[in-house]
Amino acid sequence: MKYLFFILVIGLFACEKKEKHQENTHKPQKDSTKVNTKPFWHDVASQEFVINADSTNIIVGENGVFFVFLPQCFTDSTEKIVQGKVQIQVKEAQKVLDSLQTNIQTDVQTLGVFYLEAFQDNKKLKIKDQESIWIGVPYTEKLKNIDFWKGSMIKNTIVWKNEASYQIKPIKMPNPSEKVLLEYGIAINEASLQKSHQETSHFLKQVDEKFVLKGNKYVYKPSAKEAYEEAWDVSFINKIRQKLKAIETSQKYLKEQTIFNKLKNEKIEQAWKNYPQNRVSTNPIFNEFPIEQMGWFAISKTMK
Image (cartoon, rainbow, N blue to C red; front, side):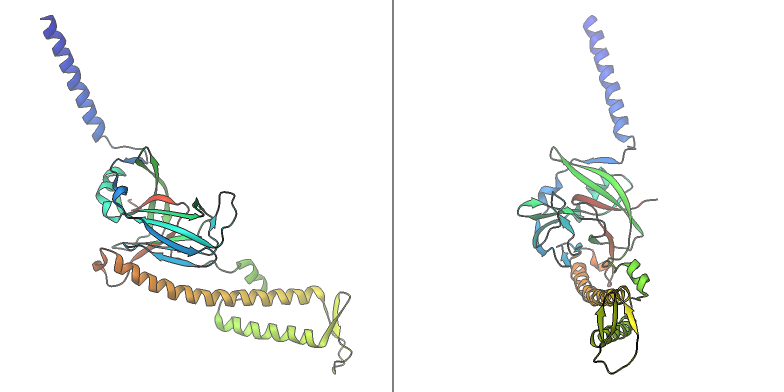
């Protein structure tokens, strides 16, 4: 009987432990950190690209994601800006949505899982600052916000943590300094810039041809036919020269923006053709936003 009593006690304890275990596995987790125990990354192909860090680059993944790298967007371990050729490694895993929905959060609708790294001389690089690298994620609908999940590899397991929510906004090149534009009254408009450039450059040309620097003023050259006694302070002329430089910078920005938009549209068409679910729309649907971190990350639809 004594042995039978011990067997019954052990049996009851095991049943109680099993019930508690079952209760815990079904209990919703409140922590934003979830663990994906399925090693899906072993089956995800690595895609290699080479870009020039000194110019704007757009690369397209095999499953439709695209990345935009603005000039000088990387730094090395010493925070020095990287120049020259950079190797980019990309992985796309849009086909693991079910496993991620299970392992990240039950009510999450995942757009995809991605891996991005940049190297120079076999050394990992970092993103310089915000809005220097952008991602365009194809999806069946246009969203207003997304959640960004950072993945950390720990003992052959990816631990996912909800880092932040991002507002979807179209990719754009950095604007010329707004402070400078306001100071000189410059409008980012092709016709307005052309007119301002003509007027400003004509004025400075007259100064160079008919005036000579004496002390801190520009005065008429003795050989000039005009007999005016007009003179300009050096500080004023220097400011006009700075205005001309700002106008030329703005004109260059407009030209580069036109080239960028054309290239982006071409890449978007290519990326949408690569997207497995592109039959949902004849027009490409991409959710664009800047990223601040590289490595493994997942994008999910913000659930309210």
